[in-house]
Length: 142
Length: 415
Image (cartoon, rainbow over all chains, first blue to last red):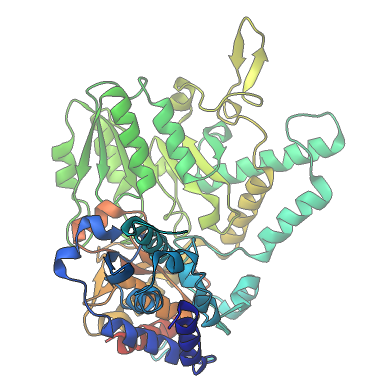
């Protein structure tokens, strides 16, 4: 599936919760709880994305020229958002990742969590995911 | 709409009072706003908003500058504002009131002008573990510049400073105590008068951060006998961008100027420049005239209710909120000092404050989460942050009920 296709899939899932903030956040919390835990070895200071309130650890790997991410956060809602971002961006090439606009966040009504004024580290995480993708690829073709 | 399970005699007509604050009728996420973040900034009554608008519509001109009518009017309003602030703090003279941008700028002004005047190499500056970053960092910078030492008064588990510890920390090298009147995170009220007494017996000057105190209580700087007192207008129901530095005249006169340029000079020539007297010496440039006038209007408004009533009501709110929240499983209140202003910080074991705050926000409830610009305090308590509800006199018991319900809902969703 392309990045856009995954984004569309997520938008469809969240359509159920358009007027139902409780359902939306319950779903996000569920996603967060299901997020596979990052290897403890990677939950270190170097992997920490700086955010004011909740912390995010990100580990990126290059497997056959596709970037695979694993991550964790100490806040559950942040974990849910992290799970969505990984679902969309993981297992794609650096080129695809860097060009991803991630408009699905706005569509599902969670844009505020990714705004620069929001101090939860998520925006920085997205930036880091793109930087890591470039750094891990020998021929980025971007 | 009726109040509360317990019998309660209303101290004032809160429904009417809330009508003075237009923003309280606003909705967030399609729900009525429940504003419990007064520690961050307070809402403004329409009296203050009208004063500011009227100033621009009728009296706007630059102050201390002109011979024309409008300039006289503006200057008169500005001077009267200063006198209102003076009376409010019971300062001996209006020259002891300096208008600044806010608490942080007031503290930076002092830290800058203390360099090699009040504080020299080897001197000791005493602060506390509960200070806001604005009452820590300027002193750190000063200490590094001159080679002074910072001593930190610890806070006990209840969030209190010990007078005994303070007495033990003072020595012949101590020159300054910089202390908060009320903790923005814990709500603890510090024994400022007693600390000033002890400080002065030991030739130590006292700077008091009153940002979180002035909205909740009457402050009398002569009674406290502090040397400097600072606060921000926007926490006292006034506009943003205006703050106060009170200093004893003799001390302010002994300090060099801070910002320089127009407004703070007597005469300027390329050979020599003479500075103005107080208070202009510390007010370079065109002041925040609307801010000063707006602040004076806010002070008048609060005086029309009366601090005695405000204090009693806020204590009732605090007691009610404390009782409601502390029965929630795994909830721990951070800051249980014997004397507190209406600030309530708490954590819930196993849950991140950010998650709780996000779910409260979805229910229209505005609280603050995080370290509240008191990172050393968070380290002391071993927590990443708290959820903080801070009450003002326009908050209601129903809003506290909503907060309790909201927290319970958040816990249920996050478990």
